Length: 338
Image 1 (cartoon, one colour):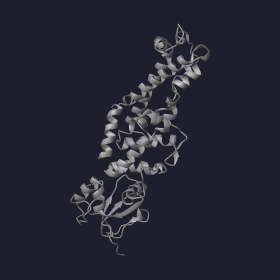
Image 2 (image 1 turned 60 degrees about the vertical axis):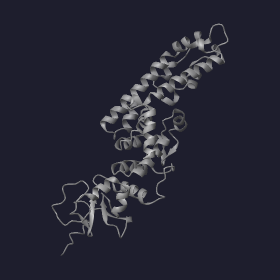
Image 3 (image 1 turned 180 degrees about the vertical axis):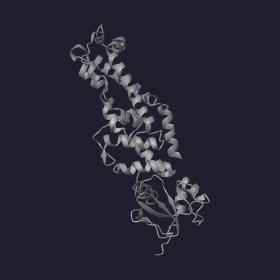
Image 4 (image 1 turned 90 degrees about the horizontal axis):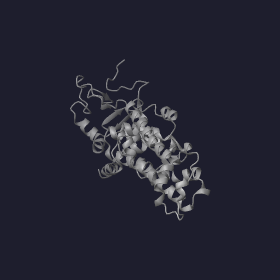
């Protein structure tokens, strides 16, 4: 039986995708599950990686020279599908490539303001748009994630609810997959907030959820977690002494400030808290006896604890070995303007 060497479609191999198969396409992209027949010119317009790839003499030109493969991860000129050059996207899952190509070719497929977009789409877009330098898609998805993990403490607190819906899941179930994706994509502007979100849990839970993180990133996560926890714990233990030293600033109407003799009960309950519970309101409400402190001193104590909380937040990037927030904001602006 004659077999067409240019038409290779093994029964257990990838199949043409139902939608991303254009009859007049001039290149086939091959993945583990799908084949995509698309247009080289459109890929090249949106992706510098594909543009450079198609300029290579042995990629995407349909040469019949079997020696022209050169071992490229992206396929070779000797690979044809129905007479059309075929490029293999090594290591990419077919479904992830579907999300990327549809985001590129379909105007309404992905919107950076749609928080109902599935987590799978978000992860695929941030990873593959970076790998293949689809700059417009990468910019949109990074801005989308950054809006949900903002650098401003007030904005972050407003969103910090583990049970809130996000990307088709609860917010808590998005932290670790997004961190893995951002690490893979070298999206540094996202990493401090994502590292922090993943570190605000008990250590056994953190290790369980972070199994897919690269070793170096896991080390950064644990060291950063320990650093900011230590800062919180040292401060909590020193609250009575610090407030006594600052009591003269509190504006107490009594001759001797309430805070000089105030008693804090059960401060140990705030050792190694999650950060959302480390607030002036929570600590003064649970630990400072109201019958011994006037309302002026109580408000002063709450304000001073919150100031320390903000100081720790301001230093947060340094705990995970990143530059300060102002530098990261400038980097985010550069991405927006790119």
